Image (cartoon, rainbow, N blue to C red):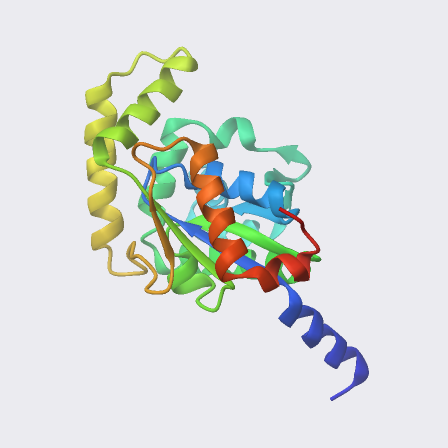
Length: 236
């Protein structure tokens, strides 16, 4: 093995990968972002990549969207296409709905997984990535796997409050039904269904604040995975 290849392999082995999975409205993205900031790691939300490809598909069709996905640029969890920040479009409800439908397409999942793995290889120290199948399918050998859960009612409440803060006129019942359908879709799809990784830290966040969930995760790392803190040179 050449010296340069050996060095790349050693650097790859040193990188820390932490996955945060969970159903819609569980707070996984918020927790993943907070955790990445605490550990000084890169944060990536797979949901935004699905939304970006859905946005492209809505404008160019599926085949062209998969081709154009190679041109997506992701910087600090913001997604750009041909120099334009897509975040404004990705937050739209119709894009989110289309992304949910497209997540069942094999070619789309393969493209998203490819993009995630390429980013994980490029970052220096490591990555905290959130999604629905990160610990089971995308990064099955992750250093730490976390699964954030919450009751259906609590997840609907969170989405309702988030919507109300944006000035949207949607009812609690709307989100309750929307998330119920999304749960069924996520758990029953043939490709990469939502599952709890067998070796994950499971946290029910129903009655917990994001700060309390983060503290639980950090305590777990300090006790069960202290070598990761040493590797990252992070003092909690």
